[in-house]
Image (cartoon, rainbow, N blue to C red; front, side, top):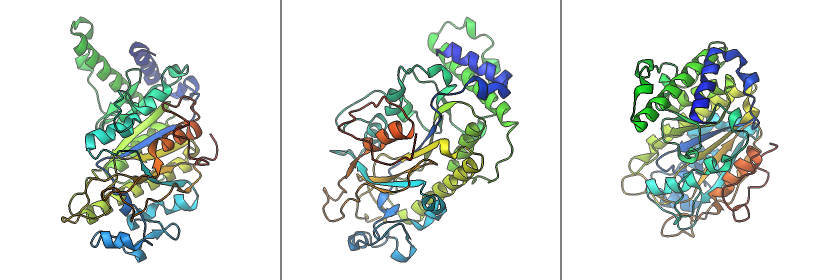
Length: 388
C-alpha cells in the first residue's frame, strides 16, 4: 500500500469507525509490543542471582539483600520493585530469558542499540530493522492500517522504507494533533521533500482523529493506568488494541537506564514504573479479551558490568536477561545464567544469542515464516509459546 492509499484508508476509517473491524481483518492476529529499556538496563539487579556470594562481593552497596528478593527459584529472583509482575509469573505468562547477548560485544550506546535493532553481528552494519525485514514483500500488507506505532523514540526494529509507521512523540497529544491549515495549499508545493513531510504529517493527523473516533465508543478501562511515561504509552497501546485498529507492532520505550552513579534508588524507581505499567496493561487486556493476542518483549543495548563503580553505579556491560509476556507465552526461566566467576574483562559472557529470542517471537509468537537471519545459526528458543 502506497502513502496515497494509506491516507485514503485512514480517511475511510475516520468517516466510518464502526466498520473498522469488519473492513480490516488482519491475517496476523497478534500485536507485538516492543519495549526498549533505553540506556542499558542492569540485568543483575533486575533478575538477581541472590544465591551467588560473588554477587554480593562485587556489589557491596548495590546488591539487593536476599530477604528482599522476589525468589523465582533457588538461584534467581526479581528486584523487589517488580512485585506487580508476580501474578503474571504465577499464571505462567511471564518468561525470563537469561544471558542474552552476542559475540564481541560493543559498549557504545549508539552502536550496540543499532546491533540489537537490526539483528546484526558486532562488526556487521545493516540498514533496516529486524522486524521490518521479516515482513518485507508480504502479500497481506493492505490488511494493516499501520505496520508500526512508535511512541517517544525512533523506529528501531521497524526501520524500513516499505514500512507504514506512525510516530507519536507525545502519547498525550495523540487525539489532539490537528494541522489542517498546513495542508490547504499542499498541491502547489513544488519542493518534494517539504511535500513529503506535509503529507506524512497529514497522515498522522488523520490517523489520530480516526483513533479518537474509535475510542469514543470504548468503555472506560477497569484499571487506571499509572501517570508515568511508560504508563501513558501503554494506555495508548491498550486503547489502540481495544479499538481493533489493525496495527502490527507498537513500540514504546522506558528509561534512561544509564545508571553510572547513585543507581540504587533510580533503578528501583524505573523497575517499579515498568512493572506497574505492565501489570495494568495486562489486566486491561485480559479483562477485555485481548491478552491472548498480545506478545510483549523487552530489549536494551546492553547490560551493566558485574562490579559496581566508585560512584555507587554501574558502567556499560554486556549480557542481560529480558522478558517475554503474553497470554500464550509459556512462562518460566529460559537460557543459562552467566557465571559471575568466569568473566570477560569484568563483564558477563553471553549464553544465548539475542537473535534466538527474535526468532521465537517471529516464528512461534507471531506465526511469521520470514526470518531475517540464519535460522540454523540462531534457532528459536524451544517451547517459549503455547500456540500461535
